[in-house]
Length: 209
Image (cartoon, rainbow, N blue to C red):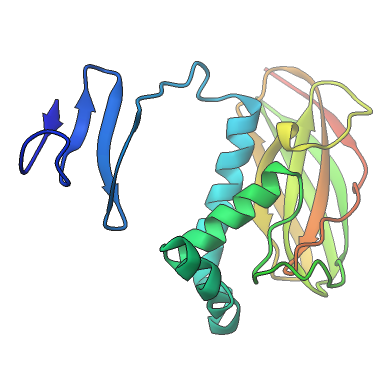
C-alpha cells in the first residue's frame, strides 16, 4: 500500500504499490524504485557483501576524526553523510576485491602485519580457526575464506567473515553451521590504507556430525 501526505507521486509518498514499485525517502530525498525480491538472499556474493557491511559499519566510529573528515568532500558531492560515503566507496572497492580504506582516497600503502593463519580444529558442525599476530604494523582486519575443496583461490565469492585486528597474540574465530566432512580455509590480512595481503595458506579439518 502506498502511504501519501498528498496525492500519490507527491514528494512524500512512501510504501509499495502493487508489489512492483517502492516509494521512499533517504537523507531527505524522495525516490521511486522497482521492488526487487532476491531469488537467493544467501548467495555467496551476498554473504560477502554483508560481512563487509558489518565490518565497516562497526569500524566507522573507531577510525578517528581525521580519517572521518577525509570523506567529507566526497560526501558533499553526493549530498550524503561522510559515513555513507565511507560505506559506499569501500563496498565498491570490495566488489572489485580490493581492501577497504579508512581514508579517502585510499592511499593503498601501509605495512601488513606479521601474522599467520595457524590451524583449523574441527568439532560438531563447526571449525575453530587459530591465528597468531606477532606485529600489528598498519593492519585493520582479516578476511576469511572457505571452500569444500582444497587448493582453492580466495575471492569475494568465498569470503565468509571479516574480522577487526587490533591486538597482538593469539586470535580465534569459530565457523558455525558446517556440514560434516572436509572443509578448507584461507585468509588475507589488510591495512588501514587499503592494501590487501597475500593468501596466508590453506588449513583444513574434517567436521563431525
